[in-house]
Image (cartoon, rainbow, N blue to C red; front, side):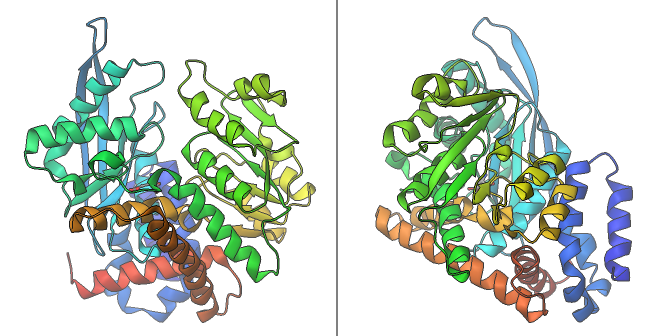
Length: 448
Ligand code: GLU
């Protein structure tokens, strides 16, 4: 490895020893940057890598809220404002008991590069809380969101930092968060959050955008190999927003989605998770008190495999859509043994490093998360644009822009890889294209 990259990687390890996910994300990006750093030795005197791996601001705060029985709870809230070189901080909020500083720094770092790839003017951020929304009443969710926003409101705004949803934060939570933001700050600055309901400034297609974008990205890549989604068998994991949108668009484009998964196991539906009723059921399951996908198997007579992951099922295309590090080396071996040709990460950092190495060594065509799932945040940026204009675009307008953004992400990644003689390499290409834009903006803005 280039000596400068090597030194900064060591320093990042020394400074953040207890943050494995963050270190994994930095290593993954640095592994692609050697040719760029060789070409730009001046980045060392600008401390560019030291700066790009250090969040501009990390906000950690106490959240106090009362449940329906009057019992007081304390959770930890976070917002990592990672990089604002190319636009206001932008990225989702995650409410999940697994949330900690390492996961959010990992996601904030990734978001910086993902947002750069969209070609829209958005910097990188991530936030959330270790609050578990599962099993909470609507009123408890509202009180928690209000308590969270009471602190966060002083750090965000349409031109500074624009949060959105992620795991555990959907349109209901965004509604409560925006209501509290408006109440405290005054004025109707709805560009301060995205993923809003249509009635108060949300964008059409924002809920579908991560999944639709993933399908458009996949369509472009397959086109390069003279193939199409039509007739392909597709394995998905998860059953949340990304899985739902991906299943819908893959089905529209003629593919057959045969698996979904939850914390309880996976469902194999050889008939295809393809009718509007089945796809709508994914949304219904999320609202149920029982967690997991067994409900789907019971309802539609599909196979349920408890405690297992869907990667044992033979599929032409595998698309993890659930959570970071959901694909292990054993899963990667199953995927290779099944003869799968295409692997696209739709969840952020879906793949453990040794699993990724294995998939790459076995010649799969791989699309990395920061490119594949960038459609979600891209439509968030389109929502910001509509809010600034005080106009709403039609679903077709948004969809056309999303298609264009996703194909330009593929094109820019391929061009960046080819510029450095790396061939059709979507992983290194995405990291390089994303890094070059952020690095150039940081260089131009001086030592800040
Ligand atoms: N949470 C989504 C992501 O990981 C969307 C973020 C946003 O729309 O700001 O990209």
